[in-house]
Image (cartoon, rainbow, N blue to C red):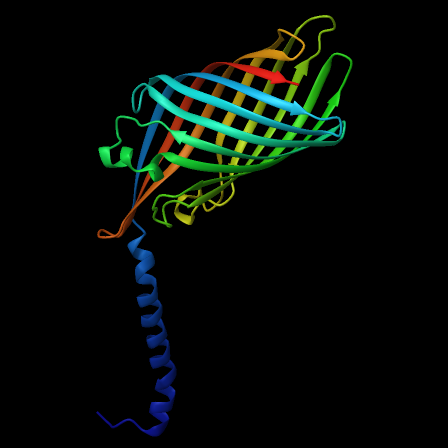
Length: 280
C-alpha cells in the first residue's frame, strides 16, 4: 500500500469531518433515545358526588361587590379510590361592574383536599400534601332579553402547590383557561330562574411530557343545569346537577430505566348539589 500524499490527506479530511459530526450527533441523541420507550395505561373512573355550599355577597352602588363562599364536596361513590370527603373550597371574590354588560372578578381560593385510600400516614400529616392555593381573574359579558339572560365568561386560573414535585412530571404552578357560556330564564312574577351552562377547561402550561401530541389539551368539560329559587328579598337557593368529563395525563419518569410511563385518566363525574346565597 502506497503512503498517503498531502493531496490524499486533504481530500480525506471532509470524510473524517463527516464521520466525526455523525458520531457527535449520535452521542447527543442518546438521551433522546432513552426517552423513546413509553409505557401507556388507560384508567377510567366513575364518581357520584354531593356538593353543599354557601355564598355571602355585599354589593355597593358603585358597582363593587365582595363575596365570601364555602363549598364542601363529598364522594358517595368513587370507583377509583372509594367514597370519602373530597375537598373544601373557601373563596374570597372581589367583583366590579363598570357597565351593566360587563363584570370583572378577582379572587383567591384556599383548597383543602380530603384523604383517600391511597394516602399514607406521612402524607396525611404533611399539610403541603393536602393544601392548595388558587387565584383567578375573570371577565364576564352578558346581555338580558325580555325573558332570558345569556353570558360568556373567560377566566384565567392559577393553581399552586407547596409540596415537592418533579418538574418534568408536574408543575409547581398550573395555569388554566376556563371558558363558560350560559343562559338563564327570566319568568315574570315567579321566584325561580332555570339555568344552564357549559364550560371548557384548557391547560396552558402542561409540562412537555404531559402534553397531548405536543400541545396543551382540554382537561375538563362541565355542564350544569339548575334552578335558582328566591326564598326572600335577600336569600336564594340554588339546586343543580352537574356532569363533568375529566381527562388527565399522569406522567412518571423512571430515571433508572430511562423511560416515560404515561397513564391516561378519564373520569365521569355526576354531582348533585344545593347552595345558599345571601346578597345584601
